[in-house]
Length: 185
Image (tube, rainbow, N blue to C red):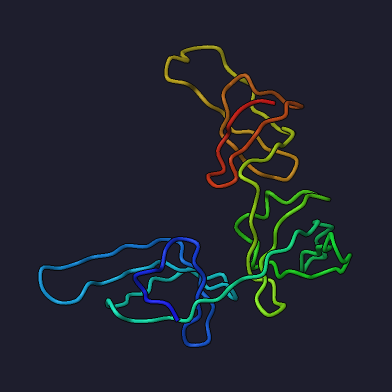
C-alpha cells in the first residue's frame, strides 16, 4: 500500500479491482482541512481515461508491472501479435492497449511491453522513430517568413506537420510522445 501523496506520473496502482496508470497529478492544499489529490488515470484494461480525487491520507495498492522486449509481427484484425525476443513465445495484444499509438507500429520493430500477472496492459515506445514519407503536398513558393509547414503521410499512415522542403521518399524523425516532426534523416 502506498499513500496517495506518492502518486506521480507513470505510477501504476489498483483500486476496486481496477488497474490504473497515472497520467497527470495535482496536489491542492486549501487553507483549512486536508489536502486534495487529483489524478488523471488511464484504466489499463479498458484504455479509458478518468479523473480520481483523493484526500490526503488515503492509500492505494501499488503494483509492479513486468517489462519484457517483444518484436511486433503483424495485426490479425482483432489483436496485434508480438514475439518475446528471449523465449520466442507469441503474445496477442488487444487493439485497445495500443489504439492511440498504432501509427507508430512497424513490422519487426522492438517494443517493451508491460504485463501484470501475465496480462499485457501497457507498452513503452522509443522516444523517437524514423519513418519514410509516402505522401507530401507540393510546396508553394511564397511568404515563408512565418515558418510554413505542410502535412505529410508516412508508410504507417501517420500524419505529421513538416517544413516545406520535405518530399516523398525522405526519411524523417518523429517524436513519439508528441507526434511532431524532429528532423530529416
